[in-house]
Structures are given as structure tokens and as C-alpha cells.
Length: 210
Image (tube, rainbow, N blue to C red; front, side, top):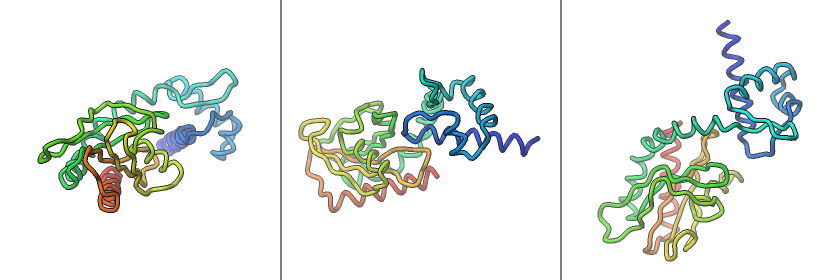
């Protein structure tokens, strides 16, 4: 019984991962083919996940992630913040710029952790909970780069705030997390120096959360 229950849980998690990959919704038949399971087995999984709100069906019968996953995501955010703060604090102090961790929520980026440097005369005030499209700002563009398999740093200027310069790098190696680590400043940031430091911080965070 324990082995069978574990197998069912594993299959359910694999199904949720498929639905979270950013592609359009799938039919039960498509899910069965990708999971290499019988259609009755997939229907049983879908029934349970739909009843719990983790999967929803659109008007054409295609399956998508349900809004129940947002509840889990909100519960994870404090853990992400706690895990990210040490790396962000080191980054902010070394670079002299506001450091942040941004996670993807659909097509938006959400700042879940922000650390301001303690020794600068002036720095960018960036609130935790700030939200912006992934297509604007270094943090969001770094997440989009991650979706394309690129891990290098991204540099922007004036995307979200006039005069603000940003450098961000995706957090690699965590299939369950689309996120980036970045810094933002009103003073010039040398991409050749700061970019690799930001990328190293993203790798450090990835190892801490693995």
C-alpha cells in the first residue's frame, strides 16, 4: 500500500510539473502520452487534482494548473525570502546597490526579498511585493532568459525607473523555481565586474535552496 501510494503521488507531481511548463493546456490524452500512463490512470489523477483545486479544465476540455497552486506558492515565499537573505545581503554590501530576489508569477515578476546596502549615501528603494511584467527590467528579462536556457547576466537601464540601472542573473538548476537575483542602482554599475558577481550570487542561492 505504501509503495502504491508513493507511486500515485509521484505521478501526480509529474503531471503538475508538465502543466507548469508554460505551454498551452493539454488534453487528458496528451497528458497520458507524455506521462506514458494509461488514460484511466490519468483520469483518476486529474479527478483528484481537480477536486483539490490544483488542476482546472477550460471550455475546450484542455487542462491547466488550478488556482490552488497559488496558495502553496504564497506559503513558499517566506521560505524563499529567508533562504535568500544571506546571499542578497552579501551581494548588496559588496556591490553597494540594492539586491533583490524576483520570482515569476505567470508573466509577472514578484520581488520576494530585497536588501539595501548599509554604507551608501544613496540607493534605490525597492519594496518587497513589487510586481512588474517580465518583459521590463533586468530581473524579469533574466527569468525569460532562463526559460530559453540562458544563464548569463542581463543589463538594463531606465526600464522600471528613470535613471535606474539593473543587472540580474537567473537562478539556475531548480526546475520548480523561475527566479532571478539582481541589483539596481542610480550610480553606474560595471557589467564586467558586477555581472559575474550577481551570477555567482544566483548560483549560491540555487545551492542553498537545492
